[in-house]
Every structure is written in C-alpha cells, then in structure tokens.
Amino acid sequence: AGGERAKVVGTTLGHQHRPHLLEAWGQRFNLQLEPSNLAFFRYLDVPGMIDKARRAREAGAEIVLAAVHAGEEYSSAPDRQQLAVTHALADSGEFDFVYGHHTHSVLPIEKHGDTWIVHGLGNSLSEHATRVPVNNEGLTVSMTFARQDGEWVAGDPVWVPHILTLDPIRWCALPAEDVCRSREEDAASLARTARTVDRMPPPARATSSYLAPCRRSSN
Image (cartoon, rainbow, N blue to C red; front, top):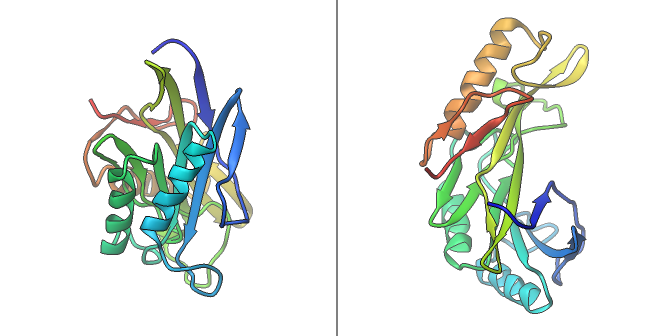
C-alpha cells in the first residue's frame, strides 16, 4: 500500500502507571508493558491494559502495542495463560500488535482475528545456568504500519532468526554467512525456529536469511 508509512523497531520503558506516548515519523505510538512478576508489578491485568490502551488513544496515540511477560521458560508453545491474555488483548480491538517475552525461547507467531501476535521473542542476550538449545535462540521481528483510509494498518511481520554462542561470545543471524556454532547446530537451530514460528496459523512463506528475512503472511 502506498502513502505514509511508520515502522516500529522497539523500545524499553520503566514506568507502568500511565500511557507512554512515543513520537516517531510525526506520529504518536503507545506501548503497554505488563509483566507477570508480583515482586514488581501486578499479575497480568487484561482489563487494566485495555483501559490503559483506551486512555492512550484518548491522549493521542495512533498505534498501540502490548508487551506480555508470561509463559513457561524454555517452552516452544504458549501456555493457556498466554493464549487467554494475548487473545483477549487482540479481541479488545484496542491493540495494533501484541508480543511476548519471558520464556527465553522462540514461540509461534499467530494472527488472531486482525491482530498479529508474536508469542515469544526468544533469547537475544543472556546466558543461563540451564543450557538447552532453545534458550540460545531468538527472533528479531519487524512490524510495518501503513495508513489506509485514515487508519494505521499493520502489515505482515518480518522475522529473522538468530543464535548465540559462548566461545567466542557472538550473536549470529541465521543462516550465517560464516559458521556460528557448527554447520549442524546452525542448520538445526534454523529448522527448529522455523517449525516453532509456523506452529500456529497462518502458515509462513519465503525462506529465511539475514538479508531476505521470513515473512508471516495472512494470505
């Protein structure tokens, strides 16, 4: 689609109790973060997040994102709580995109109704005492929004898989031009990530590479 376009790469915000408005490309964005760790914040509060999203739009936000901190570590599928929360947020109609983190493992990308959900971005940084292949894998996801008939509409997510190594410490997009862990481990990680991302409908199309990343499509 032609016309104005806006691209959201990501952000980190600390204060949870009022709408956060971000300025980019002359537009206002809102990101709602809702961790599940009781030591710092309330448990997942879907009505509260929806209320914050509405207030953010009233304050001028045109694109509203939700980040959900939940799930079982090192899993490859969202659990019941994740699905209940992310689907409720999508069904509210107040969020343009929903993504999750916490499991330190890649989880599927899903289109629920008209809303894209990235259930888990995996691990892009930390090393864990528990060493399993999935907690050294992650996704970089790009979402593009285009204005259509006066509203911002999300395009299909584009994702790039990556893997971490210890010796030497490296972050590698896959498939890597040079071997990252080993040819076998790199190939297994790429195949495992692709299977996981495509576990929920709709199916993905295209092949993955750093310069030509995978694209989830609703077509």
